[in-house]
Figure 1 (cartoon, rainbow, N blue to C red):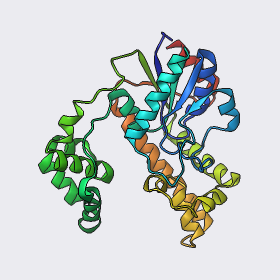
Figure 2 (figure 1 turned 180 degrees about the horizontal axis):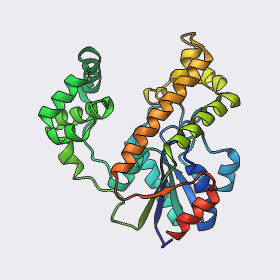
Figure 3 (figure 1 turned 135 degrees about the vertical axis):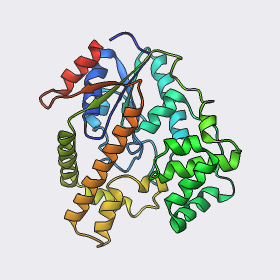
Length: 304
């Protein structure tokens, strides 16, 4: 592998990113920067599939377990902390290895983020109420009128991005699509390689099924029982595993239903992850065979 200032290993949940990254980091004198929206939370280890204490002792990990589930987190804060970690790692003469499944977090590092607008006067809450009362189609149609280019790119069933685009257009008077062109990120400023891992879809889903079963066996219910007693932030509430298990704890469904919902929602998340990453033509894809070890995948990356 040619010398790079930054290396990304991304891909869908359960594909084997963490194991591959751990093997690679030992060979290239790297430290790992988390690129995962769930592993930043301190109290969630099982549901987020957080790196083990053993793994963290072998290779330094950054942005893992850095805040409480009672705190809000967003892409701007992630970008700030990740860039600080990257600079610290490089100052030690090491290579930052960014690993995770969040396409949005990857994007704000590569392409930057615009200082669009703050949520003045509760506009986001107003749009959220409008979503509940009138439906997503009304909001998407409104976005078409204000920013046709953004509406064409954002899926009609993606409420978070639709609301954000509307918020920016209303508060700044500029479409989010034009503001995005003004962003500045790491891409083009330093040598970067981005590797996206993938497996056959059926195998990936089987790994998801196994991971969820393993989480329950490790004590997921008790982990969620403890955090459910805390005032969870809106961002923490979205962690897959929390709503499904909380439904079980509240008696809304049985344990098997909780497992089924968690597997289903994780598969849906895998689809969204793959859709996001496939849009980005800068990624080098590595298709993992079922008999390939993490070490062998790391060797493939080393040869690229």
